[in-house]
Length: 92
Image (cartoon, helix red, strand yellow):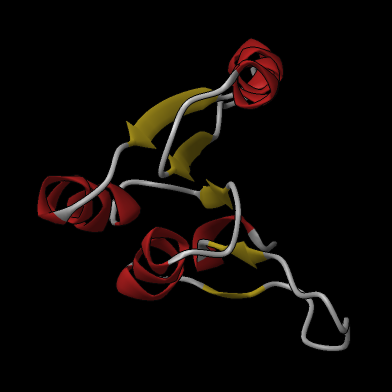
């Protein structure tokens, strides 16, 4: 039995092309959508990171920074110039 991975999806706004990515991810993963701006968005992102296996950020923004650096994450491939950030529990 395969375990569904949890992803936190972070974006400051919602557009059709972002929805396309959400639709694709939701077919394979449990997705927690954190779409919004301001302090309320940050307050939703931080606790979500502790429950996530991976984070998907649309655009490099302050919200992406909060998401990537607030959770228990580490680079899964330190030799790569573009490291993917995931929970240590799924690296093996």
